Image 1 (cartoon, rainbow, N blue to C red):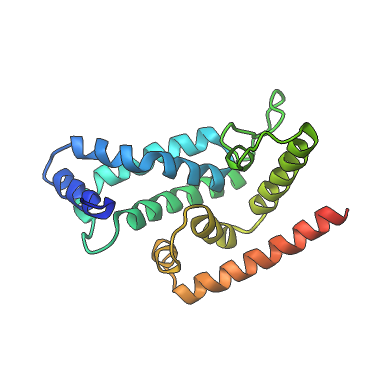
Image 2 (cartoon, rainbow, N blue to C red):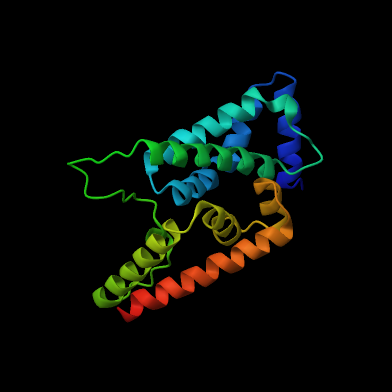
Amino acid sequence: MTNSDDLDRSDMERLAKGHDDALNSLMERHSEKLFRYLIRQLQNEQDAEDLAQETFVRVYQHCARFDPAQKFTTWLYTIATNLSRDRLRWRSRHPQVSMDSKGTETETTLENHLPSEAASPDAQLQQSETAETVRRAIATLPEELRTPLILSEYESLSHSEVAAILNCTSKAVESRLYRARKILRERLARDVIS
């Protein structure tokens, strides 16, 4: 049985040789997880959808640059992370406020991924409030701490994979994760007390 990494390498080789259908195979395997990552990064479903598509456009355009010695997912998440950084910078320079919008809630939020055991309405409300508190706390982290936390905790990537995506050392990833978790613990403790 061929593993995902081998399939990815094979599809990238086929794509580089002009077999455009290989991109469809890559998208089928990775688009959903990539979309969820981008939602966590950007906190906006439309932006996440746009950047997921743009990420695969870049994969297509630069398929000849792919190094088969590295994991495709590392390369894919590097592209997506760079695009999300650009989008976040653009947003900070061009803030938008909608009079109609009540928030940037999407159907794909952390609270929708928490397991539901048909809890009582009170328990569901508490769970929803906790998930929202965690989501807000993560969203307020500086990008240099938020990105490695999301890649590590939600995308289950190793420290070395996160380091490759962020172009830093594994030790730097460990340090950023430590700082991110410490800030989250402090903020969550403060939010629970207040």
